[in-house]
Length: 496
Image (cartoon, rainbow, N blue to C red):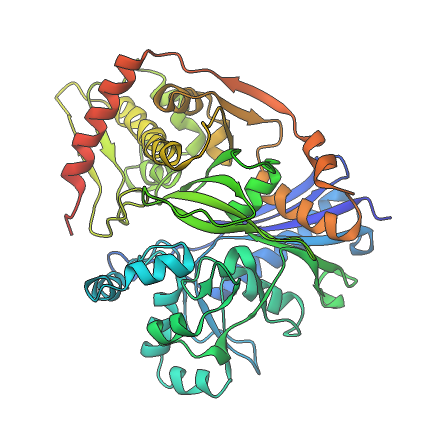
């Protein structure tokens, strides 16, 4: 049996490929950033060819760095930025326009109109989601309405819609497979979460023709194989999951009640709730976690923070406070606290539990004594505070207390941020030895389908702790900081 599995991790700001061995350890990787396009305020786009070009280049480079050939891979798994929406021609495989990124808010008015019609309860009951421009359904309708001739062509079956997983799967298989897994499909506003099938009432509500949709498939199963010319030999593609569901799998959160938080461009907290969707009373989302071939689906509650690590990118690129994102920790550590500065990074609105598309970024509490170190520390605190809001909502929904939070993603390597998270959330924060759990989860899903790993129990035994961060402030100090945060959030809301 081949000893290696490759994960393709197509994220919001970069593409990566990582080769893992049977111990779940990375052997080699390659990463490329790509262009972010901001045509007007609130709009965020990607060039679909950038996504494909960089992802393929990373796969080829990772194979070379590992010193192996495509025939040495047992399988490929895909993890992807979710909700980002693409439309392309079936005959040529060419995209009809830009990819509308999950952060994009151009359909806020359309969502507001549906809410005003009283449609949100119907949508939430069927999908587990809220009416928000974050999700793919209104993005797809926008593309169909604004690309000349697209709606008629879609109805004739000439066009294909997909989130990034579908786009990569189409390109990797040379157009042989048009599919999406249950985890990605559950983020479109078009899938019934209870039947795991496209819903005719939702398709009518969002005015989406069924002919444009991909097939819904399990997250761990034989889905197709790569074109031989791409990597040097055909490789089975046997795993797909949205990046946050993949990270939950990579964190071995296999039992109901286990939770993880991923610190990427945004922050995404998911708690496994078992084999049935659980509605939220606190404006969290119900979502499909994964499904293995021949097995029932597993579900989660999720809270999404739109701007996590992106606030550090803003400090780097927008304010030019430092040259590399990694420098933020040392800069923030120069001061014992933020000096009263609060930063609410609502650059594209606020996600859970507020769901305010009109909120905008705010920095308050500055004095003449404020330095760039205070701003850096306030930015890190804003990541932890937003995640603490989500955890508090999740604790209210949970049928059992959350006793620890497993963490991953690039910013999880920031010790100062992780201690802030433990302090502000009031629960231990546990970082695993391998923090690239999004890619690892995609690899595990793919490897389970090809026998590289025999069971989830075997995978759980591979998970190892790197460091555990215990809360180090008392309840009064925590409550004071959370109250000050809430005051700042209220000032940032409904601004646009």
